Structure formats: C-alpha cells, structure tokens
Amino acid sequence: MRISLPIAVILFLALNVFAASAPPPEAFVVMPPALPGPQITAYLKYQTELAWQQDDARRTAWQSIRTEQDLLRVQEQIRTKLLAMLGGLPTRKTPLRSKITGRIPMDSFHIEKLIFESLPGVYVTALVYVPDDQKKSHPAVLVPPGHAPDGKAHYQALCQHLVRRGYVVICWDPVGQGERSQFWDQKAGKSRYNLICAEHAVLGNLAYLAGTNLARWEIWDGIRAVDYLLTRPDVDSDRINITGTSGGGFQTALIAALDPRIKVAMPSCYITALPMRGDLLSLSGNGLDLSFSMFGEGEVIIDLGPHNNQTPVVTGATIHSLTGDLLELTLTGLSQHDVAVHLLAPPTEVVSTVLFSADTGSSVTDFVTNAVAQTISGTLSSALATACRPVLS
Image 1 (cartoon, helix red, strand yellow):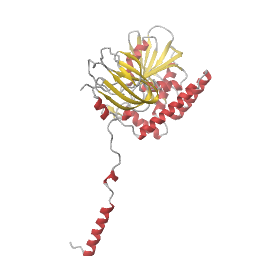
Image 2 (cartoon, one colour):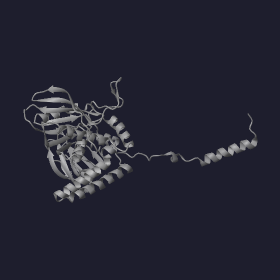
Image 3 (cartoon, one colour):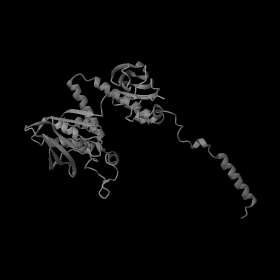
Image 4 (spheres, one colour):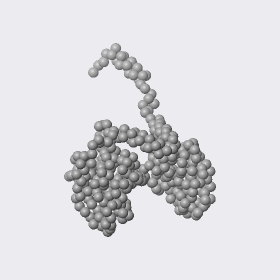
C-alpha cells in the first residue's frame, strides 16, 4: 500500500498534535494517595459533625424539660418526627386471625406456637411462653429478636428466664428472619440471599423506592403483638413491657416510642450512653505504655489484661474506676484529649485486642494499618469506647 507524500505529512502532523495535547498521567488520578493509619473521610467528617449538631439540639431540648407537661411535649415532638421518617404507620388495624398451631409442655410453663396476621396476608410466626402457676393474670414482656438467622428460636433462654419469673412472653420472627424468609428457594432449601442482613437490605431498598422503609413493618408487627397480648385473659393490660438486643434493641426503642400501652422499655446493645462520642486520631503502645489521641468526650474503657493489681499512671484523663482488668477513664469536655497510660511492670499475659472492635489477636501495628475508619469514628452510642492491650515485641 502506498501513501502519497502530502497525506503522510498530514498524518505525521496530526500524530504530533495529538501527542502534545494528551493529558498528563496525573490527570487520570481519581483518588489522592492513601495515608497510613485510620483516616476520617470528608464525607464521614460531615456526617459526624451533623450527628453532633443533632445531639446538641437533643441536649438543649432535654435540658428544657422541667415539668411533666414539658416531657409530654418533647415526647410528642419525637413521635411526630419518628412517624415522618417511617412514612407513617398503617391507619387501620385489621383482624389478627391468630391461631395456636401447637403447644410444648415445659417445667413450670408451656410454649404456644402462634401465627397472627399483622396485615391481611402478612403472617407473623411467634412463640408465646406462659407460666403454669394457676394465676389468672400476669405481666407481659415482648421480646423482638436481634439479628439472628433463626429469629425467635435464638432467644429461648431469655424468654424462659422471664416466664419462670411470672411473665407471659411473646417473641416473634421479624421479616427476613426465622420462618419469615421473603426470598426462600424451596429447591435449594435456603434463602436466595441470606437471612437477616441481605434480605433486610433487599427489602429495605425496595421499600425506599416505594417511599417507605422496612422499619415501618417491623414496628407494626410489634404493635400488633401488643394487640394480640391484650386478647389474652391471662395478661394484665396495665403491665406490658418490652426488651430486645441489637436489632431487637432498635425495635424495642421504636415500638415503645409509638405504642403508649408499653409501660417499661429496656433496649440492649442499641441506645445506651448517648453523650459518649469521639473520633480516634492516633494510637501507639509497647506493652508498658499506651498513648492515644481522641477528639470527643465521655467514658473510655481500657482492658489492661492481667496487670498484677497495678494502678497505672494516667495523664490527659481522669481515672473513674479500676475494676479487675478494666480501667475506666473520663474525658471531660468536647475537645482533643491526648492520653497516656503507663504500667510500672509488664502484664503477666500478653494478648492484643483492637480499639472499638471485638476482634482479638491483632497487634497495634495491624490495627493502625488495617482498621476501617467507619468502625472507629463517628457518634458512639456506647460507653465502651476503647479496648486495647499492646503487644510486647
């Protein structure tokens, strides 16, 4: 193939122009180089600051409460905001169509297998624990399960503990847990996703598209569980209570907030110590000395490990208590705190745990380089803020 001279010159010039106008390599860099150690992204920092602003507003509102009327006013404001976030609740209570499908005799109590409809065609599977004490009326406790694949079955020990103390107890499967998989593959014998989180995520995303959210239906199941209890002659309608852990703590707080028939609510592993909030800035240790910087306020707990009953030397914070291996420090004032903890002699056993994590067996170096910022930063809802024993080299 032959190319005439004028055309060859044009192609040569075009290639030179293209090469001269090509963007430099840095133009293709999307993200800045990663810095060592845990980092707070700009978006996470924005979320944290927004959460703190909302917490400041909450504190201001709480400090304004001086009378019962003040408290009732704030409660109503919270209910209104909560209902708006949920997209409201169903406006009509339909027949429960409750049915006891089986009965399990136990020592001093029995368990009833229950199905009821929280909405037409929406079946809720539950267990009801009933004392065999011949009393005509009992207080009752609702136990919404946390994030366990087997749902209500996972909380049998708690329910049996309560029923042996004279409570009628109802524990039901939240949607996507236990017997209420919404994506069950009959041939495979399992959920097409996985029970709990994956099903909740899929259902939640679909609910968002419809202008609502999954919590609306979880709360409604709990309110209808109260309705069921009140159909029973062996339940005292003036003594209805609720308790739950983790996802059950979430349900406990919201169901109790929206159903005034519930007299006592005890959430676990959900809302605990609201004032504790902090951002971990740095962490280092060598087995005798632990140093960390944190922006925040509240209580910090450090697991010292077996330390021969030493009282550590602490600077930058106030020792609140030392119970066994647990050292509790108080960080006063919302500011940056540079804290140092010194042991006079090394611990008798060297085990490492990680800040703001239940993981074990990781060294401080591993923590600093591998921890995910989202797990250690932001608004903390628990007084358990720190657990770290540095590894001796």
